[in-house]
Amino acid sequence: MSELPDNNHDEARRWLANVEDDLAGLRAVQRDADSPRRLVCFMAHLVVEKSLKAVLIDAGVPFKKVHDLEPLYELCKNAGRLTGVDQERLKALTPWAIDGRYADELLEADREKAERFARFAEQVVAAAHAELEATDGDD
Image (cartoon, rainbow, N blue to C red; front, side):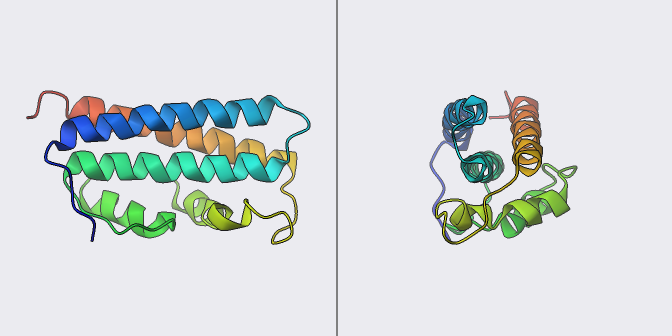
């Protein structure tokens, strides 16, 4: 298990600020017609993974350093956080942590799939922000 920082509140917000930077990168890749769609899927996975981890840090829940979204989400759910996230979408997005990096490992994602994952990432980020806002002042 990982160790949690002394100040979960500030560290979770630092993680979420980093998520916003990654989300800006996702949007830039998404707008670039010459960028492979697999990179949009990879970036969507990265954004969702870090969002889940930010919420776990805020909740004081230790987690293993994994890229698999499902166990991270289970920890969130068990803590009563992010309970409305689409688990099927998480499951479908998980392979892109690795496959999205290597063109020879996976067929290129089509535009529709990439757009769907990008929208999902935006939704998870919004939900993570809402979770952290709900705990502001709980120190």
